[in-house]
Amino acid sequence: MQRTIRAAIFSLAAPFCLTNCQTFRHQFVSPASDWQTKIGQLQYRGPKTSLIGEVLVRYSSAGDFELNFTKGPGVALLIVRQDNKFVRVSGPLARGSWSGPPNDAPGRLRGWVALRQLILRSPTQPRLRLTTAHESFSFVF
Image (cartoon, rainbow, N blue to C red; front, top):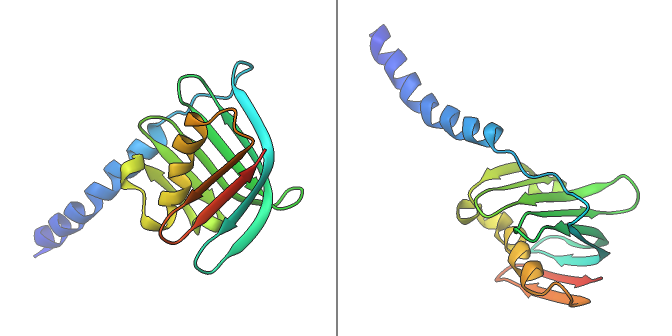
């Protein structure tokens, strides 16, 4: 009986541990002087939330990406760190934090994860907009 319980606990805990180990091992490249930086405003509209705040976006020519969405000094609403294979989203708008491959992002974060491609493919545009089924993002840089 004890062995059965231990085996069941191990089989349930093993995938969780393996996923979290991958999360802790992934290292994002730190922003460097050759990264592009954009500062502006972001208007976010979601199913239950509508906000306008400041946004800082940094990205490298290799596709490394960082987005910080804040409301006033010192109030971080959402932080996105992303590269080609991995993304980490955290903050109150993310309802905690999530890390993993971009294609595996939960529905509530897919719009935020899609912003990397929007910004990387339109680096000189002063205004950008993305609308998904349940959210809209409007940038002014």
